[in-house]
Every structure is written in C-alpha cells, then in structure tokens.
Image 1 (cartoon, one colour):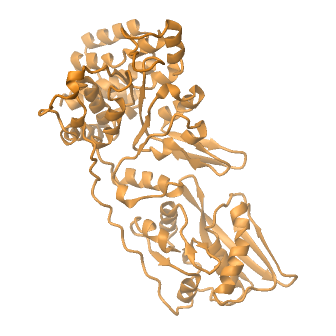
Image 2 (spheres, one colour; image 1 turned 135 degrees about the vertical axis):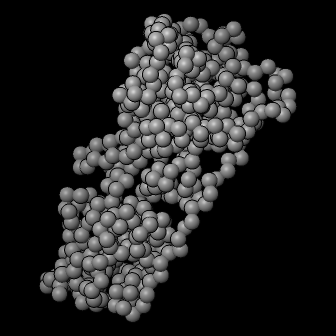
Image 3 (cartoon, helix red, strand yellow; image 1 turned 90 degrees about the vertical axis):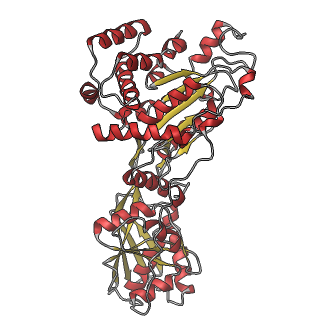
Length: 503
C-alpha cells in the first residue's frame, strides 16, 4: 500500500484533540508536502524526518510524498508530529508493517540521528489515549509523566528503531516506571517566624480556610511578604482531581511538570513589570499565563500599586468566573484559573518615613493618585482588606515561645475546609448567590448589622455576598453551625479598606 494512517494528538488548551496523520506516496518528482494547517515547527519536520530515517538505516522514498494532518482546520504546532510522520512514511513505503499502527498513538520529536526527544503535554495526551482506548508510545522523557494517568497503557522508546522493531514484532518496548507522587512537601517557612501581627495572621488563616482573596496594606518592612510566603504552609492539600488539573496545565506550559510537587498547591509571584498577556496567557498559539499556572493555588502580587492598572484589570473576569478564554483569529483556547489572589501594597508612594498615617509626608493628592492605581471593581472582588501596621522595635527581638506554628494553624484550616466540602462540595469563596442564601442565613439582628455596614461603607451587592461568605468561613473555623453577630462583625471589619482606598 502507498497509503498509511498514524494516530497522534494536537494540544487545544489543556485538552488533547485526536489527529490523524495520513501519508500518501505517489509517482512523480521527489517532493514532500505537509497540509492540514501546520505551523512553522511542523513544516520544518520534513528535514528532521528525512535525516532520522536515513540515519536509522532505512530508505527515504525518492517519490512524491503528501502528508495530511486531519482535521485540517485544527492548528498543529511543535515537534510532536515528527514520530508519527516518520512511521507513516516507513509504513506507506512498505518498510515496516501497518499492523499495530491503528491501536497505538505516537508522539515524539526526532533528532537527526533518530533519537527521540520529549514533548510537552504528556498528561492531556495520556487522558486522550485512555478515552480512545489506544496504547500510547512516547519518548522516554515524557512517558513517565503520562504513566501518572491510571488505566493507560504507556510504552517508552529512545530511538525510532526501537519503535520500528516493536511494530515488526522483532523487539519489545518497556513500560515506564510508575512515578509514585511523594508526600505533601513540607514548607520550611513557618508562621511562627513572623513577630506579632496577630490580626494579619488571623486574616491569613481565614483566607486559607475559605480560599478568600486578600489584600494587605502597610508600610515597608512590616511583614506583608513574609506572611504571604508562609500561606503555602497552612493551605489544605489538593485532591487527586485538583492535582491532575494543575499538573495538566504545567504539562503544556514551558514550566514543565514536576512530580515532586504533585499535591502541593502552586504559589506564583510574578514581578510587577509583568504584562497582561503574561498574567492571563496568550500568544498566537495560546499558552497559559500566571493565573492559570496558579490554578488551585495562590497568585501573590507584591507591590500591587506598581502594576499597570490595565494589567490588574484583566484579573477582574477570571476572579469571578474561575477561567480565562483567549480568542485569536484562527483559534480559541480556554484555561482554568481558579486561583486565590493575595496582594500587598504600601499605603502611600514614599519610603520608610511614610506609613500613610501620622508619619506620612505625602500630600492628599499624592495619596489619592497612588491609591487610584487600583480600580474599585478589582478591590470589590477582594474579600479581605487588612492593615499590617509598623511594629515597635522591641517586638523584633522578643522571643515567641507561644507563637503558633504553621502546622497548628493548618489543622484548623483543614478542619474548616472539610466542613465546606462536606456541605457544598466547594470552598466558601466559590459559593454562588443561591448557595449563599442557602448556607449563610442570618438572624434579624445580624441582618440589621449588615445593612448598617452596607450603608456606612457604601458597599456593593458583590461585597454583600462576599461578607456573608467570609462570615461563613469564620463560623466554620469556630466550629459553629450558624453565623452569629460576632462572626459577621469580624467579617465586616475586613472590608474597612473599601473606604480607605476610595477616599
């Protein structure tokens, strides 16, 4: 036969779409053409494939070769198509058998010597192979990652010749070693290292328990970054499904997936010079940005007011929807972005001689201009606003024998988090308006208290629901079935910066 068909996949967001590589060899002047919306790296594969076939001691047909990547309207990029194209040419030219091609799926970039190089997106590819009930054959560097998907038959190979011998039933391929995800990584940064700042620690505990967004405002050197960097040590561990979602995002990104971080929630801290595309993702072939790399984890924005306001405003929709859709002329990609935003900022633009209050040398106009870098709609989506005041110097060298460790705080956080999962199968921060009405009922006295706060602080309807979610988390931490006036008062106290920013 002069026609061969090989199965592979194309990455579409965090999903893998089946692709059929059809190779036809006909008489005519020697030529090789690739059709089916290939991008530059795929078009260049003809030179890599030719050298790999010749260096593997096979003949490269001196005929007209047409390669179709179907479906034709799905963009194809990367070097993952080298291996299926090479196998299709060898099968169409009769140098290897067609038997076995239909039940397998192939991915891999070829070196000129015929060696196989790893490709990205091994996890989405393995999920697709499992759904299509095909055996997955990948380079050794990618097969171990794909083997994390249970009930998927995966084989690894180092060279094109290894796969050819396997298809000719002249040799066997080995299955990769199963990666046993290690235990939850212990974080060396402990909450007991932070001196004083009890109110900020309490707010961070509430944020961790309910997955609430949080903004810390205070002069330089008060411990805002220290607190944020220790949040990872008190967060509840991810479920297997959450870990798989996060790993799939890293699998298709330039970051790569590290099995040692299997159950650890991601913690991303981009520099304030980051662009909007760097945060939400993009490119001609859309790739995930920082908000997607923070999926099921934490996005920490230090020096929040140093970010461009237009860059910050791109976070508004993902904070509400938990996903980001990137549209381009040729394609559209959707990435999950269920992240927890933790931000820190100074109260005014000056240095250590300013704290936004009694020591401040800034004029009201300077303070207003500085604070206006954060839009009111973005601030409205942040559940907790907490002031982190300057500490007295004596507190810095005092021993803290009774300071709580991250492990102690984490136990309370996990207990409250489990209550939320048992009640609504989601953390409180993700409750819908209907679920808020169902799970956050108030007494008449508490309703009056909340109405007064809404009037005095000029809060929006969104802030109203976020206060109720926050009060629900505080009640969960205290082991209470109902939201009391005390829980509601504490939740309202974390919204005082609405007035601080807007004035």
